[in-house]
Length: 334
Ligand code: UD1
Image 1: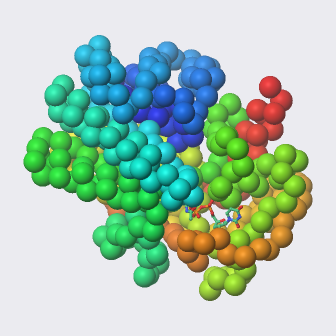
Image 2 (image 1 turned 90 degrees about the vertical axis):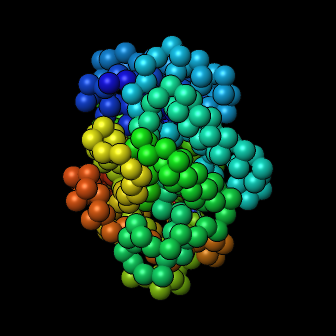
């Protein structure tokens, strides 16, 4: 089976390609390298010992996508490609809507034309906005607070309409909680360009001495220790969720939505403490004001994914903290 992976050199995309290859799928990657590095391609080949076909193209260029479908018999698609920085999306909404929506429309247009109707879409827990209750279930009300989140929600709505108009489609929407960690080889991982926005990439740069001090955004939330609580999930577990989702697209038609999280919430201070313990170091941090737009707590009810996809997260917070740092140590050695 040949799977087209858009954004396959990114953080979650690259880990998913490794798991696909390990499960004997053939992989075709399309990535425009706007937020990824070409070296990742060789790393994927090194980890798996398998070949991958690569197109350096933009999914927003319809002709390029059409050509890929013409040249390959694609059986299913996993669509990761997209912009993902919340703050940037507030500053540049047109760029976000254009990129994140046109790419999906192009892909679906080509899929329909070439009769490839199995799609796994990369969504986010951000579509739940500020949930009224915890843990979050898939049927909770959806609402967004920034253009990035809105592009995810709009993509979900587009896919729903495509399925209604063409019930031959089999679409799985995966709503990720907070992916961290890296492959056990230490060869691929998360390496955002510039100063990181997210917690774990920031912590690892403080640990490696590249940044001086972590700002903890708020200690007066209504949570166990006052700091924000999130459902961190190991990226390898997340990648495996995509294998289960692809398997389901080959079995059933329809459109289905799944939370991919562990169901456990950890506070910022718990993450710092665990990171310090497993890596045997100290993280310099200080408490500062809340970050605008942040919610107190967010964690998944992952029961539906277990029941319908037979998937559950296996790796714990210790492995996540160890592997996140291991990747940075390894890449700084190169
Ligand atoms: C953020 C995005 C979310 C996106 C997700 C992708 C915002 C408001 N939300 O989620 O839309 O889907 O990333 O992974 O940007 N924290 C600090 N100091 C830091 C960074 C973070 O204390 O330097 C805290 C935050 O306040 C939060 C927790 O760490 O409580 C996790 O933050 P982060 O990693 O940015 O993820 P989210 O805010 O959950």
